[in-house]
Image (cartoon, rainbow, N blue to C red; front, side):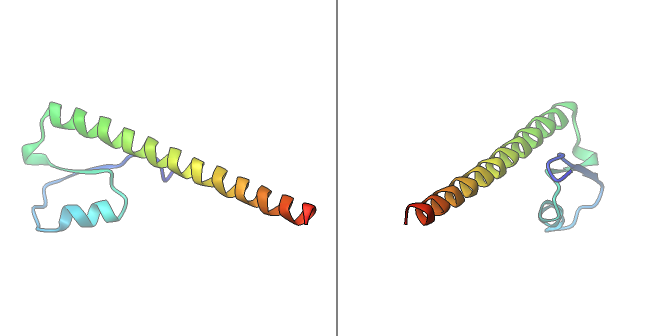
Length: 79
């Protein structure tokens, strides 16, 4: 599911590693040695909300395209 939030927990501390994981689809990136319950809860809430927002935007784009196609079809009928 492309809208399922994925939070990566890692011990790797490489510059740019976090951005690469985000580009690959991770919702967030947390380092194990700095992990706290508060940070994990924040990450889960943020990731879930971001994925919900992306799904909503995708749904709106599909609706927009459908409406546009309807208008174009109507224009052809009316001429």
